[in-house]
Figure 1 (tube, helix red, strand yellow):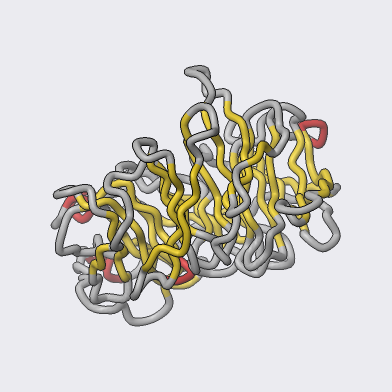
Figure 2 (tube, helix red, strand yellow):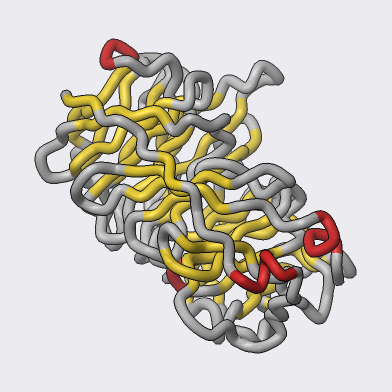
Length: 335
């Protein structure tokens, strides 16, 4: 295992931001876009425009209705959220037109929403119906692919990750008020326990049934091949390598790299999926998440706020952290 210095690059602020000129996002943005980000409530969406090393937040996306609990698929430029009016699940096309499409047949006010790595499918869990509904043909013509019964699983689902073909969901069910969870495999053959004994954080590789799982009980992150079959496990990093906690995991768009985040220390482990070798670095930030952006190897590390936002770039070579300046207060609150 090798260590890497964190190169924190001060980002050039776009001329429009420096001059206070409004960058309206009512039309499709001109030029490159790194992806989109959300506020804490999942009700407001901002584009990240520009290029690595010279990026900034554009004006908030204007929508025809208010939504919350939103999840973004930056690779496919759409989002899924819950309508404030009636709890309907809707798809939002983030192409400048920002059209909202209700998703028919899906339970209202779902508790957990997950989008697959490439955005080809989504899953929604409803505690009231004890089902997971799998949605395909996103975002223009969403329809239910299958409905999975999870009524036999004790507890309540708190998060999940979905394979790109919509065939398998890895779901964490909370068993008590102490945030202890158990990981379950859910597919058309029925739910079954994955066999972990503590909290876990899973993420699927794109277009595969392989996943990376951070296991709190064993203090190890491992790659699992064919989770719905033999589910062989290969450990890739652990607390013995310099991490104090295994807080979040995510995978690059081409499946070539996986990232494990330690929210306690700000340490990141970047794992080469082919060699299974890990590079450790510190982000120099207070980690709050790990969200892949539109570009293959870029991940948002800190939440949108009045502070600079940190972005991880794991493009082959030496990983680096980029800084995006915060929006001025008047532009964060403008309609």
